Amino acid sequence: MVRQRPQAVRLSDAAAERIKEILANAEGKYIGLRVGVRNGGCAGMSYGMDYAESALPLEEVVEDKGVKVFIDPKAILFLIGTEIDFVHEKMGARFVFKNPNQTAACGCGESVSLTPAKVD
Image 1 (cartoon, rainbow, N blue to C red):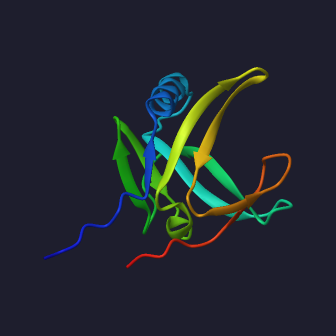
Image 2 (spheres, rainbow, N blue to C red; image 1 turned 30 degrees about the horizontal axis):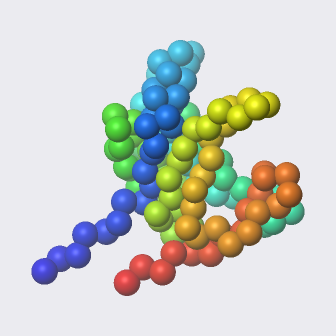
């Protein structure tokens, strides 16, 4: 029996609708959203989001709720199980990464500590 790999990321309904809206109003010819993590910030890492014009070599491509999400291969183990949400708050709206691999976050909320997912 072949065990299926878990989907690396999923989108909330609110995130999918907001991403579709952003892509529809973008100036370029974008086919989806690119996500990753990078070193930096007081907690050690931060999430990154950008437009995707095409798939890059070795990227994981997840399609969820009609949105293509392209994941940097170096970020896969840090993002497995993550839900990307879009929330409205008193002072604005933003994307939020609900990541089971996150062990800490800085006070400003801009950087996080992540551990790689344990994949059996």
